[in-house]
Length: 117
Image (cartoon, rainbow, N blue to C red):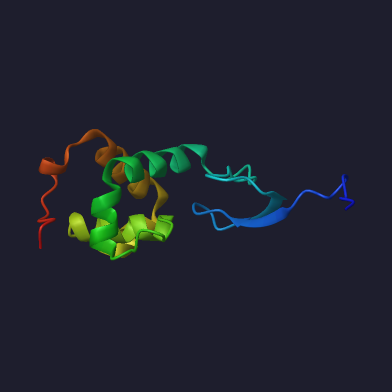
């Protein structure tokens, strides 16, 4: 049996969870960095920090299954719910970044929300 050796690499379409831009690149497992230069690397990093720290709580509050990818809209809903704020507050990037910074620096017991409900 003969195999094609110079097979083209598989391209995959990615959608940035932070800015929503779509782009194509060779398939990579795991997180892929957005190609949009205007996309805030700092916001992406803050999102990842909060997801790593509070993933089980985010999934419970926003009602996500284990196989669903947590995106920026899920984090906005999570923040609105646990801090009793209006969701529209987090359409302001500065407010969102400040909230993600706060979540990165506090413990779960400092959040005024009952995660056992």
